[in-house]
Length: 202
Image 1 (cartoon, one colour):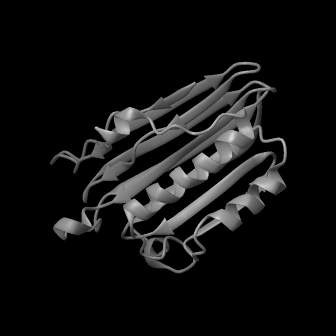
Image 2: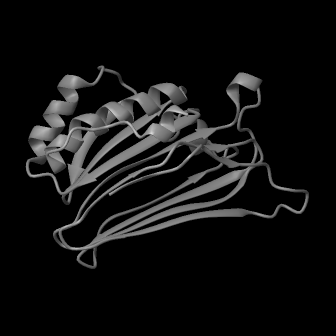
């Protein structure tokens, strides 16, 4: 099953009372099933405050391929993300056992946001994951050969979870990278060619 969204999610500036928003995605994949979770990007405007969580519960033989793309601020309108606070949480379990747990705080006032050891001042990030590939090493090699070489992305595998990361400043670059990776990985996981959802073209 492939799930997507009709448009980008927009996280607006908090009101004068500083009320935070919450965006929570909880997905369960049964034995022998395959889920593709391919939402359009999340746009966090300057002053946005809230928490975004993604929880994936996979049965032991379940397979899952998905991504999250996050863009901070509105660079085209010269409205960068200079205030606010976002917290992202990922949790993936397989057969009830945690295999990928991650938490990151995005605060433009914190040194991590601009430090080279952290966000590096980047305004766009993306994470793509794949669980259930038969040959993860071969999939990684195929990605490295097929995708444009760039210091802005890297791919690895831990505990059976293939992870591709992007960190840069271009929403379109991040989206294209994830889409190309999905088109390569989908046949390896399901034996079926990738077909772009029609809703992305409307």
